Image (tube, rainbow, N blue to C red; front, side, top):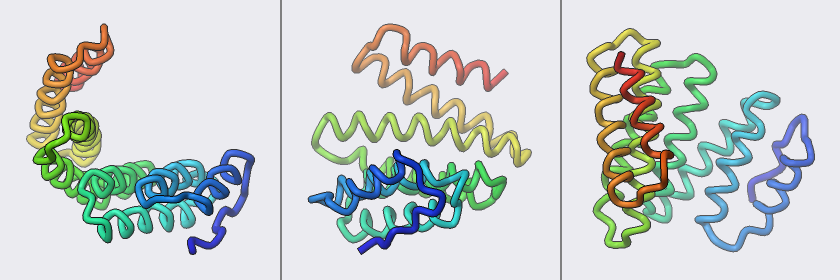
Length: 174
């Protein structure tokens, strides 16, 4: 279904492609498409973009906000890595909107995943906005990222993991 676009294959990419070909559910397929995209970004960016876009399509067909949000964040990071800052900012804002919708889910593990995605996406958006020169958005993004990391730290303390993330947000704020 997804055709082998793995130009410049390596063992990891081949393995991911084989797993994708045999994936039994859409959630697994979306995760594997994102991993394939990451694996291909430097050697075959057009193929990476193909897999990211397909991940978004599958997530939308399944009406899964969390999968859609993760896919949008991945493509936003792709555009950031390729210095397409307007596209990166646009996709990260869409990811944030989808993660926010996913917060309405009943399952506490899914809510935690949505908060984690929000914290990371706001952090990414702050970095992009800094390069873009939108300092109001920079401040807002890092403050929101810190807010979600604080929530995560209070829900599931993991030693210093979230505290380091909070510290990074404070550092980014200056």
